[in-house]
Length: 548
Image 1 (cartoon, rainbow, N blue to C red):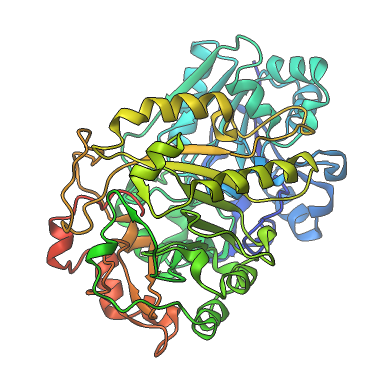
Image 2: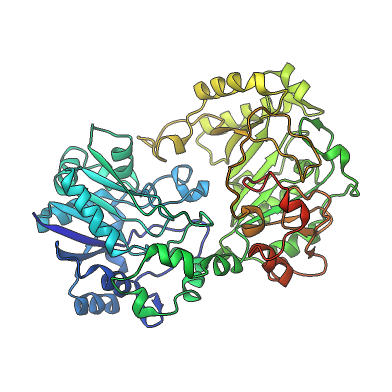
């Protein structure tokens, strides 16, 4: 019974982040390969360690480093592998994790099993430097004791997991599905779907939950910054005694991760609104009605670059499409993962650059024009229907277009429509994230709507009374993702940390006076993120757990 460990470099292209060279990156004089191998090299049951990477990634430095560590190098031809279209990539949906749906390629692993005769292959992504040896050993024991075909590693923040495969499983899939074994993410799809009645195991360890559920793989400048500023003792960090649980508790990684910059930037292009919708406090708003100027938005956009690893969302307390500059705003955000949330009170401008957006979310709250008129008075059902027909024609012509989502806010007056809403879209839509981000073959016509969602009702800092019979709020209060990861820029330039502070009462600053990055790094903003200070509305808030 032979077991091998493969340190894996996937070679995937980042859509919205600067590329990180995993083969050259060094933390306090240690390369990633040295860090991981320092932890795992003592595992007695492992017969061989292999670095598997695209042939174009091999350099003299990585070759010498691997040789000095006693690690063999094997390569694969990335040009012969098939990449998934953008709409199937987790990067596109901002839902990346360690499942392998975006990263794993089966053929290189099958080739290792065939060459080395491994009965069990442990695949450790080189970007996952929170993998700990004790847990890897336990997963090998579990996998072999229960004779699993593959073992999934659960309950860990992305960047701390690995994959355990039975060698015969990989050889069998290579023999029966050689085409899929060369497609990015297909291996995970075949196993999780599953394509056959595989015997799947789950290794649930540890039980500790991170305070922020974010991606800690070494795949962005943000993660490099985080680890560069939290790794104090490199010998301890690189040794077999490294503890994932202790690192989460004691490294203060959250402060450095958030210090790098906001993950979400929500822009309010306009606070004008023609509608009167259920559960919306717009009629109570006392702020002056105004559109954000092109000059103000350009100032915001110019202070960020692609490598800043942030998502842009056009939303707020008004209809974004009413802003006369919305087309140029969308164009400036094209290099980011960007989303527009609309109720379609008016149509998109003729010159709107749809390819600049990743997603468009339409608030519908119903399935029929009659219910729509009751729930979203002032919005135009005809606009939505005509827009979806336009999307359908674009899809049929195989033209690139943002993914469209529809939402319903759960409210006492929409309760009776929820099952109809879910039932209708369940028949009409097949979200890719419900099928492990994979569709085969890729050449199929997609439906005009890509996803649907029922949203929880909000009280907006207790301005409104919740009417829904179902309470979505978790029992245990955790870190507020809004204040920790996001900034909200109102149409007048005021910057707040809370999407429910629609008056800007607790604004941190104004982009007309300071850049967004300067505001993010103010002492008052840092104090909020680190939970050192909290305005009274935050103490009594029931909306901390979800985004607007």
